[in-house]
Image 1 (cartoon, rainbow, N blue to C red):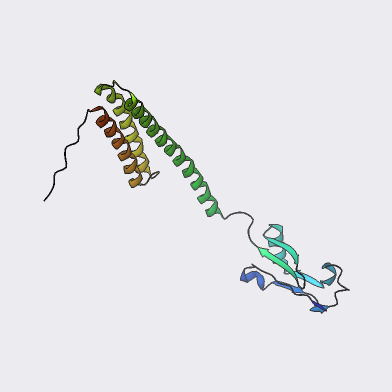
Image 2 (image 1 turned 90 degrees about the vertical axis):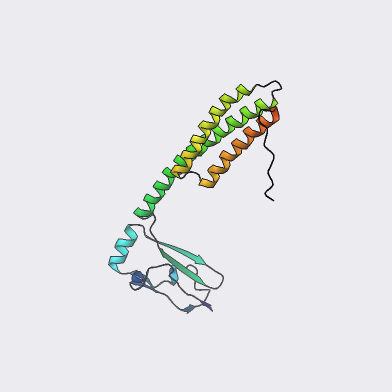
Length: 188
C-alpha cells in the first residue's frame, strides 16, 4: 500500500488560495502504472490559470521518490524585474569602464618599471637619462589619480601604486649614486 502525497512549493500566498490539487490519499502500487492515472483533478481558478500559465510564470514538474510522488508548482517570473535589469545594465557598463581604466593603469606602471629596470642595468648611465622616466612617472601618477577620483581604485591602492613607482625610482638613483639618503636622526 503506497501513499500518494502532493505538495505545491514556492507559490505566493495569494496564489495558494486559488490552487487546488486533489488525488487519492492511498491506493495499491499495482494499480498505479503512471502518475496521470492517479489524478482526479488538478484545477486552478480561471484568472490564475490564464494570467499565470500564459505568461510563463508557473512551471510544473513531477518528481518521483521511492515511496512518495510530488507535484512541484513554482511561481516565479522567468525574467528579472525592470529595476534589477537596469541595475544589471549599469553594473555591466561600470565593469567595462573600470576594466579599461585598470588596464591603462597597469600598462603605464609596467612601462615605468621596465624603463627603470633598463636604466638600472645600464653600467654607464647618466643622471639626465632619468628625465624621460620622470615624465612616464608623471603620466602614471595622473592616470592613477584619475582612477581614484572616479572610483576605479581605492585611494589606498592608488597611494600604494604611486609609492611603488617612487621607491623603484629612488632605488635606481641610489644604485647609480645620483642620490644619497641622509642618515636618520635619532630623537633621543
